[in-house]
Image 1: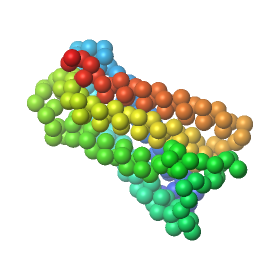
Image 2: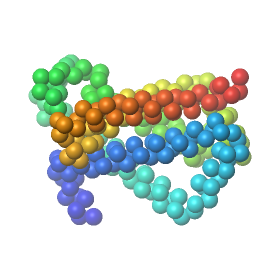
Image 3: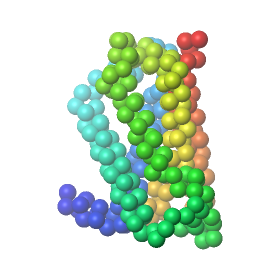
Image 4: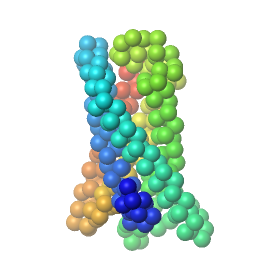
Length: 223
């Protein structure tokens, strides 16, 4: 693991790991969303999917460890790079010049300038999500079937609102993060940057819309 330690000591290595883990987590978002959308296919199909997932045994544990490691590395690097960027600036600006496009001014509330804040909100949402569905620390643990558990939890208005807000924040975060990850990995050329940005925005909209619909599942189907 000495190569990883050495990589994380350099700014280029940090950006590379940040970009790599970012794209991996984007892939996880797609897979997770696809599974969640099975809620709309009915109780039998969703329960079968959930039970097969949990019957994977050691493979599921390994997958969760890899996923946790990716999250941990991404979060750690977010803290480190944010700290280094703040220390490198002599003063704060309400507006600043983009490093990617000379002369382009980026708003202080743009996705690019709020990545740390949106990431922190997503982390808080992740803890709520894990307490609901993974560790069963909330009322959903009273239901035996995964479909009934999801329906019960998402039928609570405050939780549905929290999940809906998180869906929008996730979309806002990846609208910049997806394209930024390619840049961090060295895929940066004027010929392709425009297309990558368009794909990034499209990906963000689809992810946000998908999770937004899922967050409203319980409210819509218990009324």
